[in-house]
Image 1 (cartoon, rainbow, N blue to C red):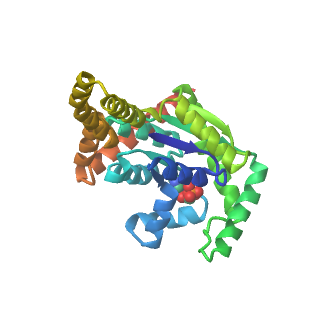
Image 2: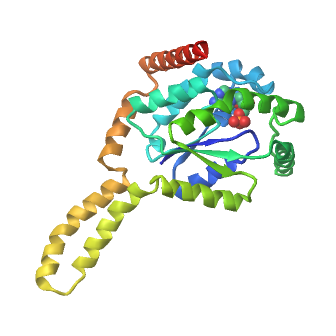
Image 3: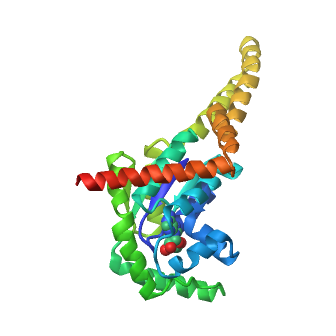
Length: 284
Ligand code: AMP
């Protein structure tokens, strides 16, 4: 399962992503979290991102696309992932399309969490209070002033993605003002509707069917089913590991990981995406 959660700061993307991780065993890929870790570790990426983040501005596309490309290649992402906070610009979305194509991966859905802007400040204030109560360090960009800038960045740079994904028939919108539980239910309903939940269930059903047949009393049938059971079990175990296609994708993903070639590819993809956007703008 591969999906994107789209929504302004404070819309509940992180909370819903965590629920998906727990329920489906996929990984949450939050560029915000990864960048905060880079800032804390004072890596070269962290040093470039630090001031931009503190001011509520976006980090350059090639940096985040590079981070995501490397992260998708990690073994724990083979089963699936939920992108939280990425993509945030049209060139990032185009770069992601290109990356997924190269890695032979399909995006199942983009879920937009739509919320009233007036509620966002209150939500972020609640998040800050909760973090303080847990003794956690509060984010430097969770202040009313920076939040206003982050919202402006969302409106001008990220909101166009709603049109981008709806044109590609990938977008589903959920009312993010509902309770956390209701939003989760709605997200799960969407995932079922787009068929994102099916691949794991099918082989398991097959194996159960073969096992039931094998348990029947007829000697002839039992002998036949016994022959089928190892095949079905093999299929089920293949399903559990992600199937032939997933293994091929995992191998393909592992091949491209962290190399200089991969970095050049990311740069080429971002350049190509940026050119496309410029051309489109020039046409308008
Ligand atoms: P978040 O935790 O998603 O609210 O992100 C916090 C900050 O990290 C943002 O305000 C940006 O400065 C930066 N950031 C996170 N994701 C991206 C992205 N996809 N593109 C550019 N900047 C990002």
